[in-house]
Image (cartoon, rainbow, N blue to C red):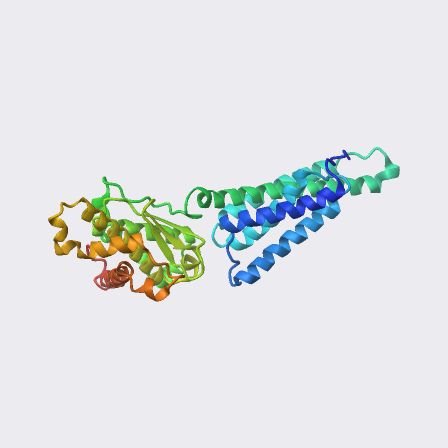
Length: 357
């Protein structure tokens, strides 16, 4: 076997430690999410254990002949990739299966090609078979690690350059189709909010429903901007948030997976109303001095002040909870959710007669 050593033994170990610490920070900020049914502490322990095991096994098997920076890279990618597969399996199942199948097939093909080569020196047959087996194992690990890297790259690209790790197939409303965004025209999607049906939907199908709801809310609230629904890993206790910079309604991935359709619908309607509040504030700033005294704008003054001095729930939950912008959004969401489910009930009871919003 060709000697692929380019760094010393001590450096090989320290490189693993250095890059493991650095990559931990990167992974925690972009891709980390708790493993389903495990706490944050348990998930971190599992991730750390996978990293340690992968690095130790890599050091043991590659210390003699594959001691280089590329091996360090693949050992770490393998560890983070395995954790990513465990944490995201129920979210990106198809992507994970496709990448794994391709990597496995390539690994098997390579192993067959290596192990089936004719051995001319029969005296060293066992030593040659051992070396070829190790070589096949090392290359197979690199191929699988490459597949895992692709999985992490695809999942993380949106989180790196945007806010989400999962987006719907349904597109936001445009000026050309906004008039079509009614409950009646989208009743097939709205009916999917029924709990028994919702439970059977994939994560992307659920997002498709929520994007449809956001489109309906955009029309109903008269918003001049689109609403982009997506899902991301949010802090525990945060069900979602609205970013007016990107017009995004970001739903917690955990909420999308575990919460009822009622709760997730409430989040989307709540955040959609925040977009409406921002447009009211813009209307206030665009009005002339006399018009600003209209009763219509009294809440807008409060919203403008709260947006400028927003109180986060982690800092002071009581003050956060009773901000006008949050109180009004909760009131609207509760009314909107009840209305959606009333229209679903009425549609089913009347044998398919839908109601406009």
